[in-house]
Length: 400
Ligand SMILES: [Zn+2]
Image (cartoon, rainbow, N blue to C red):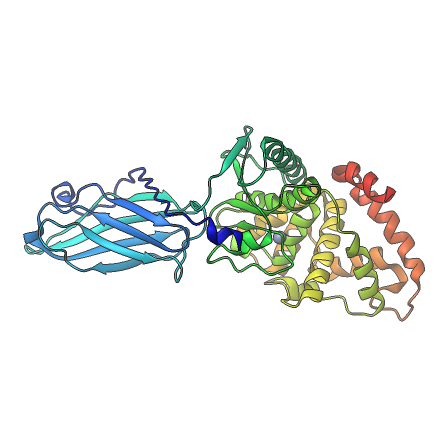
């Protein structure tokens, strides 16, 4: 509600760098002037290009590529003499990826049959409805709307701790800073056109923007929420940087398992859910978590719990190198099962069975026993597994 009152007619023009080599003909300078983009986030974007010779233009096109999406070719109406070419893009209907890069180029066919093109331009589609404050270190930039510098510093600290955790599990050379945008609450984050975010989610990692978007209000809970959300979403970004060519091929259980493993505070509900599901034989087969997670709320939590526990098991038994080898296999296009076989030299099925027997002992899905003593070994194993990266939050947690 609050946010709708804060909409402003924000006009940002970030015309940027020239990408060479796209122009098929060298006459481009004689037809096109320097273009401009004005947009209101979530409403519309207006692309304008001055034209220097209207008489020769037969047709005029805009080539538009938002984020990693498909190239769109849009034919523009021919403007009257002296007027620029204009295209208005409906961002409410067809949103660009938030904080992603939008590339564009104008092209025209001329009366002599030749074709000309402008240089290629790009701009970042930032959420310009708000004034963003920013703090950074050499690896992370945090942006936030509400709250003082103390809030920003808490966010930077949480993000730094999360990145440390993520890089311990999956060492990656971070070249460009990781960007974290903090919206004041879930409703604010859900107000972003084009993000389909379920109610239970607190944050999201924008694949196409290489940015983590969190929902945290300044206040008593801020530190806990920042430390809960930032590491998970940052791990998604680290994973994407580790598998830049084939990130989409990484199985859901692998990505969400890693992101959950990087969290500073393991969800206390996960253990209980896993034990119950194991006793009731309702654990979700990992094979079905390869492509995507279930949509209904209960099963989503169970899927996360399983992915985290399974990844923790892999990390403990095969280490970062095993995780990196498996990820490399996915990066090379291998299937969900083949990636595990190549990276860990065991079938997914056998690995799952070993994980279950180690986690749940006699109360695994293969057994009828519903003995709650299974919690004992699970607890002990959890402690062992959690030790290297999560020793501090663990000690806090078990004191509770
Ligand atoms: Zn996630």
